Image (cartoon, rainbow, N blue to C red; front, side):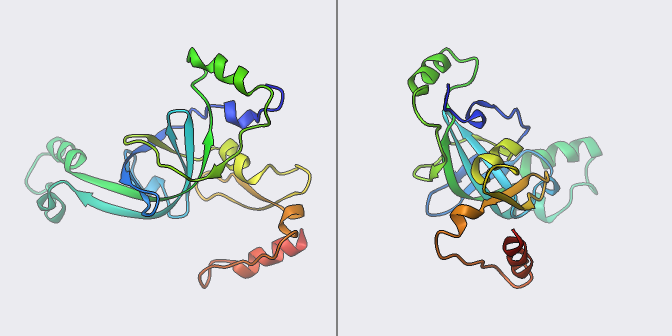
Length: 209
């Protein structure tokens, strides 16, 4: 595995936050949360694991839903015991993430899979697998998790690498986000965003780099 990127083979072991329930390439993907909604924020980086591939995406929205609108409109606490209320809410009320899929990466079989050794041999003389533009979608019920430090570094690079400069951190887990200044200046570039999103601040950071 001489030239293969270490992050490709590091399984994050991150705690799942939900699973894919729908969506598409043109429309965003939908992930049913299995953790409290306050653990995920708009703009968060997430990873969807599907077979030998993992998909990188960005949370663009959180939406409340119910399998039966009656349970969403009328709180059950006034009518049922706390235990029954909790069980009922878990079965009927939910939160969906809307995820914008951006990149996909071949990560290979699981480390303990009999196919893993064959996969590594097939790739040992190749350059490292790199994130690719999204061309397909993960399968139904693919697990979703918050991006790890390795996931973020796979896309944006690591602080200290030649040419890479840290411009910020991810929201939930405070992982460093970098930019390759050597490549950034090779083409015309611009910084866009809504009012108050920090465009001027980011511009000053990049100019200082």
